[in-house]
Length: 237
Image 1 (cartoon, rainbow, N blue to C red):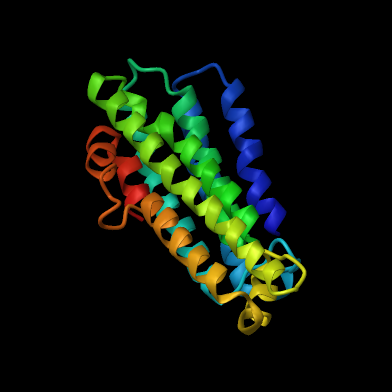
Image 2: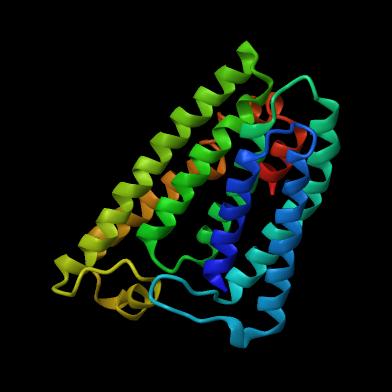
């Protein structure tokens, strides 16, 4: 089911990219939201469908986050259709494709049980959402997009360094290097304290910048103000 929740939105996004009509293309956004929400409910109501692995697993907190993400996206997707219809003078191919593939990246973040894989998924969300901020194509929107990319990239780079430090905390303690959550928790007491503390600080600051936590939130006012309301709603969620 994890692979379906990740690849089905990608497939729908691919179909969206080849549809020539500005009028019918946005309809696939709520279609992706409905399919994803149904799969989410199916996973939550039928736990036996969850096949865990070292890379992908849906733990109890992940179930809550997945439900929140899927529900928020579903409501926002229904708003996106009339919004894009109203803005019919503007091409919506890139916006529609990015909206749908964003759901795929969010699903991967939720299912990920590996720090490295989660980093890749979060970086993917950064690259996918940048065109959404730039949708209005104004001077202020491009400024907001660049600020989002630059500040977010600095944060995600710090998170990557923290990920390396986390792996080295295992290696320095004489253990096999691992970024798997279960193994990290299992070996937590044996990890090198210095490298573990450094990793924690870098991961907190790095992902905190991506999340827009104070005082690393300087990209938020511009991104929220210049992007379409539906994008700001998803960011806020």
